[in-house]
Length: 119
Ligand code: SF4
Image 1 (cartoon, rainbow, N blue to C red):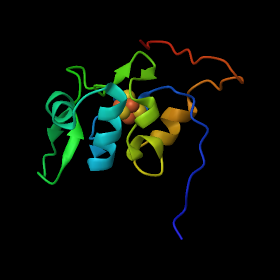
Image 2 (image 1 turned 30 degrees about the vertical axis):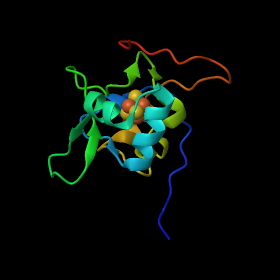
Image 3 (image 1 turned 90 degrees about the vertical axis):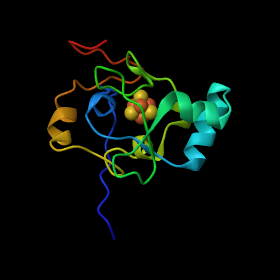
Image 4 (image 1 turned 45 degrees about the vertical axis):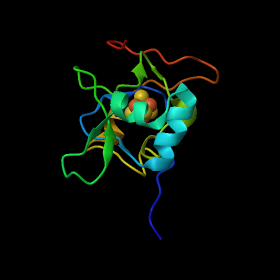
């Protein structure tokens, strides 16, 4: 049985800014397309790229490296975000993620996240 980390996300968005790939499959493309009111082919053209291994698609990055769907501290496709994002840090993480995430001030219930240097 795999060890699963239970982590209370503070919405620091570090994982949305970290270099790497947000891998997506057909169900995720359909869900995000529907959320944005786009045909799937239009979504693919506008928001995806071929992975370097040419074995599927990933979300585009902005020129600054953050995910194409990150808007300030919000995910534009929050209600249909990819499995990789939903399951962080278990489905995907980055070296040192724990120390990055633990450096984020804890939020009180209902409090909006506020970080120095953020958007
Ligand atoms: S899809 Fe949303 S949650 Fe996933 S990396 Fe992009 S902005 Fe972050």
